[in-house]
Length: 273
Image (cartoon, rainbow, N blue to C red; front, side, top):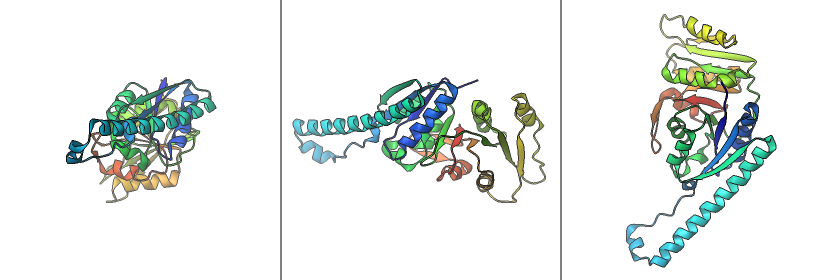
């Protein structure tokens, strides 16, 4: 299993150069084609009240439309230059797309093996909520902290609770896990449960990986708090976890663990819904 094509969202924000370099580095590791996409809706169209619009002439309305188109084209061109510089630096095959909005960006992500985007607040412009986009992509995504640097992925932490979402994330992350020198698997045990998972241990062994299994008990502490504690202790290059919530592009509704991990993440998060 490998990644043949990787989509990176170029959001026009301050973090986009770092995002592009991270994505280009991942593409180089797997010999994948890197696809850069910019959504025009990230340039906010001016709001004009209906009563004002009614008083405008056709020529005035057209001038406003032309000004918006010009601003969107300039922003897209700036994003393209940043993307192509990152792809050229890693000497990876690249493709550039400009799409209309978040729906089109998610549709593009569904037609690639991996989606990489910034978790920084800049990506929320134009209705582009990063977690919602990741959920709507229908596959694995890497959500990057602000200013993320290319990684060797030598240490990876897998958050495991046996759910469908966690299984989807793990299944999609094997190419990256294969690069790691150390893999931690964190599970939370409640009550009298011992947290042991022989089937999961066997699954890792079939992939030639000997994980360090960490069973976190933590009393009544929220799972998100316990997981963050383990991330801070292990200092991994990547966290693999399920993404929980409702995949609505205009309304980000996340589960508690997902919300906590996505609130200013310090390490890249490999997620799947």
